[in-house]
Length: 308
Image (cartoon, rainbow, N blue to C red; front, side, top):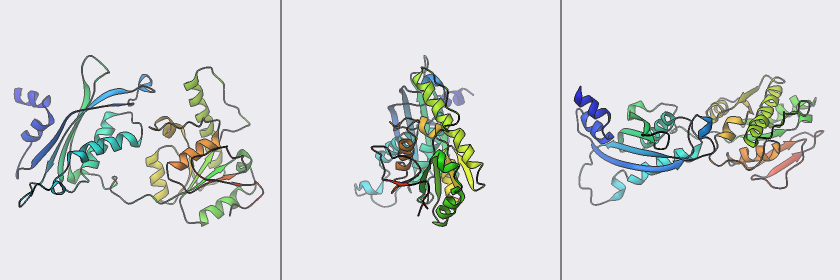
């Protein structure tokens, strides 16, 4: 028991050695890699950064034959730090468990990696380090993981309130679906039910985002093909399965590492920011004025005109 307790708090490299069985594997390790990042499920953790510490051990198949001092034959330490940096930049996360899982999956995409130990600790949330540790093996990487093929390139469309209630809505959707590309629809807040106004900036941002989501559900109710989506995982799955998506922006906007400068009230500009996350060639805007600047090309379509 004493040895088990010691190993429970030991460095992941000691745990890796203690769990070794069968054919011995080589190990590379990253110790005490500290990064400042915004992460956490509590409201007090939003809008601020905190230090998190990574300790990672990767077990790799021993090389056969001479290494010849060739860096291309080994798993570089840079691949471990790059996996961490990639997952931290992809989206804002609430849970260390989620981050550890994603880092482990990405490392296991490396052909040399067989098993990985990941420990992540928050250093600023209490008198001690608070963290999680996971172990994942190559056979444990989910089939739906990040190694699968690219998500199809979508068609992104902003619909004004006038477009949502237009008798042409079904015809526009028919034309857009006929293009054969995944379709994502964006909307703004309804003009019929203005959002409440409060003096707190962050609270107002959430209220305005929720107002957009209410209108997304209004649009979805008008056509059975439309499915409201709020996470990138949902969105990727829906696009791969040919669903017409209506973007509910709260989670993606609030969890974005690169927070959009566009406010929810500037709905077209916010939709353009969202389109840019897909490297979209354009955002089709039906029945709304275009902003002065946008991160993707915009194409305006009058409310009385076909979209194509």
